[in-house]
Image 1 (tube, rainbow, N blue to C red):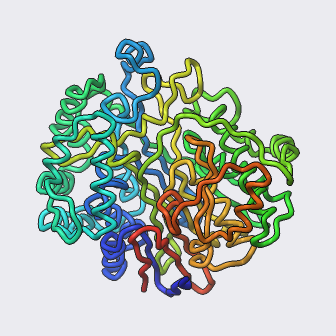
Image 2: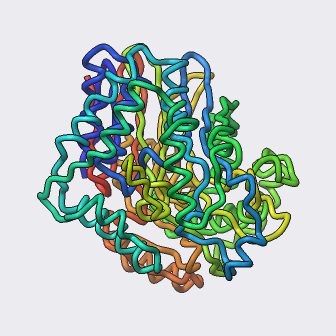
Length: 518
């Protein structure tokens, strides 16, 4: 295990070293944290399309003296309906294809963040991304594995991957990958901004690609895309204030889990702590899947899910001796990128961006090199459910950038990729950092669990002692042991502020990223 790196004038962490380098270059050039984060995200969308990109969604939390939340996640097509899916023989929400695509919000998000906070032009911030797309970059062994696996997954699900294979003709380690069409898109954004993406010829190409995939999204749907600045939700845990974004994210799920845990005695690395944490995760996931979705469709106030009365009732369900049953259910899970940054003036950003499963929906826009995400695959087909598929609706988002504050000032900026594991990882990281007092890197390196909703199995990393695993099985847990530092356990990054402008930062060795600073 390594220790957190300390810096005095800003730091950045992402899940790919080339993206972290792009962010650091901007900090060194005098840009602020938001400038650096956008530059890093633009580069990451080129070098790690299996996580995120120019056809995905984005959410962020920014501290600029006060806390600001931001969401640019897209809605389903206005003409979408359950009847359409039924007529095509779908009995569950498609994971791939046109119906799984909601309006991509990332492009709008980059420009919105820069409009409010940026000090450097988009065209300057995009230079490294453009260079990586035009001249290419060398795939690492993990990168080749993830990219090839993403394309193979789409093929295995019976979706035509011909355009993807044409865009990535040779996927192997140590091979240079260039993306001239994506470079063309980046140049268009530099000269014309997001309007061309949502209302111009890029929008026309997106709609045409979706039509070929059987979707009903049209240009008006892209034109109607709206982002939002939001007030984050907050709740207390271990004497600190935890900030999360409201629905349609699962931020309320993380807060519910943390509030339940805050009233439970948990010793460090005790079997009871692991057992109870798993049980708390089950409770939070179950409530999420009943109540959370598009906020306009929810039938309860989202804050009820982490209110005192709700939490006390859920805490009373915990049994220290036996695991509660959890039925397996079909869920979509996939690729996401979490990244964070702070600068010498204390401006800090927690940002998460996603293509979701594999490399997204499998719908590729060949003229522009765009992989359209499949966040819509998170919908279910239950009529009148808060997360039920319908026209012009926001799907449940697993994405949850977060911060920890004391007396209104951040002490930590943190988050993780991991789909349905994200809220569970937040619980584990904050127990380590706030309850146990670990530095960010030590907390990130520690072994994790993941309750997998699709199998009802508790996944554990192999580093967890056999005696602990045996004790959990004796309590009724169904367990799958994964290799150490498996992707299923997420890619987390975290910043802890040390005072006087200094910070320490940790990055996840489960990814191929790096934490860099000044």
